[in-house]
Image (cartoon, rainbow over all chains, first blue to last red; front, side, top):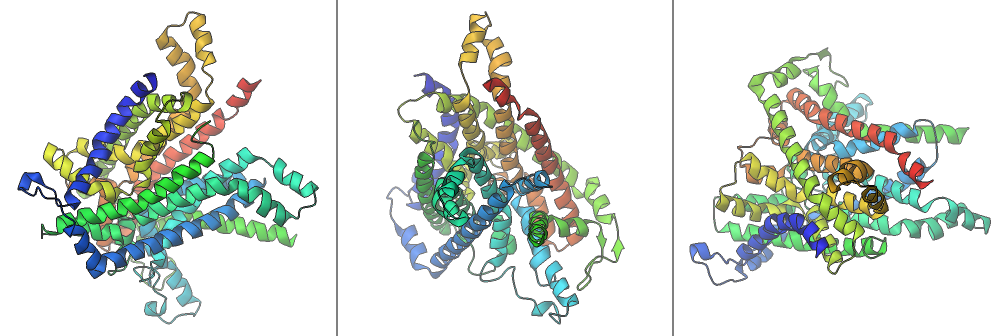
Length: 283
Length: 267
């Protein structure tokens, strides 16, 4: 009984807010609203969003943003964590700077990326001064662009440090002995890394990458600042449908929220299994 | 020798990358008319700062509001996480892994998945447009962090210390204040700071529950950013970021001070 009593306050708040909000979203997405006389749930909101062209394009864009951000952040974080493992002058400063990104809100980072990479931004000015372009319009569109480069730049900047910190913690736990043993048995540095260290790092690396996927997939304020007009990121589209003057769009917005939750929920299941492997579940 | 230079350059590049978006914001905040293609502003001015800090702009009031909401969210989240983290970290019981997934879920599911339903729920309760409604909404994404940190901390905590204190005649409150809390304090602090930062950065949940009446700094910054006043945006961004960075620096200093402790108890 005791563990359940200790968990009760947290679970009460989680179920009362988070659970109730998800439940209400689900009900309304099936157009089940007894308050206004809609008592026959149906799937029309889902068929409406799946047959309209905009929604699937938005899902595809958000998946593209999430996959790109997660893979780039993971690769850069792995290199950074391995480089930071050795002691050197200024290591403390660099590990301190890595935490900066965690404390900087998305809106601030996104505006910063805009001032750096837009066609009149800092890099365009440098390119002009270096004689590479002859005007702002000649600089490639890296923000508000169809490939979502600006959005991914923001997420790589914000989440690469996050994955690095997780990897540094695992590296500390693993210690240097396994690699040293492999080296003394004749493995090259690459073999020791690829066959010994990397497999041991994999559960935490994959878990962190799955988290970054989920963060970037549900992005709202970042694509609002850095995204193109069409297609919109799926969270932007869902919120816009929700605040539409046409009330008929409301159940469709709810259905979009459910689809977003299901895709992110898939990541949650994968994450739970990875964390179980990393020693969080049983023991 | 060449290798040393290369790795020093790589470290410099990494440091620049980590600070990258903050640099133009800091320069813009003191720039006066900084047009393409100038690399640096020709004239410096404190006009944006003095407007941002004057009562007319509402930035200082918004800073206080954002801080208040984040502090209250952090305290409530950490208080709820403490017993839960102890149960999850120390005890084995049926349904533990289900609870862990449930705790993790609000951190993984995007705000948009909750925001629409939560708005409907709060409209019915009359909580939209209120500061407390926004605090309740922020609790959802904030709760996982202190809970998971305290779960990990309690998994390493040795309850025999509490037994010893009890054997020596300590009352339950004394055991809590003099034995348990000092032992888990670093985790408590880390969890509280993370919950604070989650609320501090929150955008969509504040927009949907606050309904424009609760203007926290991210909402205000967004308005400035889309109005095309880069100097004001830079100043507001600095005012928004500096307290969070100071907070983080404080946490890091505390952590490096308390870090040697576990070794001492190992002996």
